[in-house]
Length: 66
Image 1: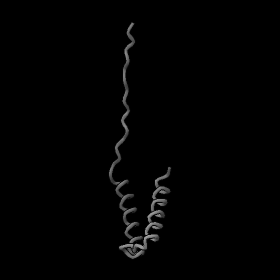
Image 2: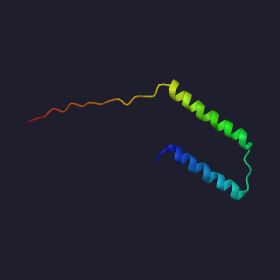
Image 3: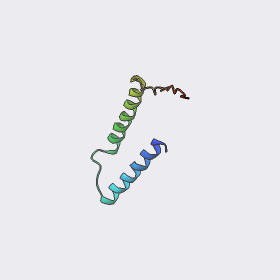
Image 4: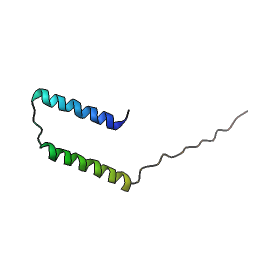
């Protein structure tokens, strides 16, 4: 399943839970959204800057006996 859909679903569930318990978010909505945007941008920058490990190919040699 797409990680973005899972993340969106989790966010909606937490939002509903907060609303049911009448818990106020510790940050004003605008500040929270700017912070989340910064996290996304930072993650994308690191994905392009930091080289990702490449999957190595393992080859095996099997001798036939007999």
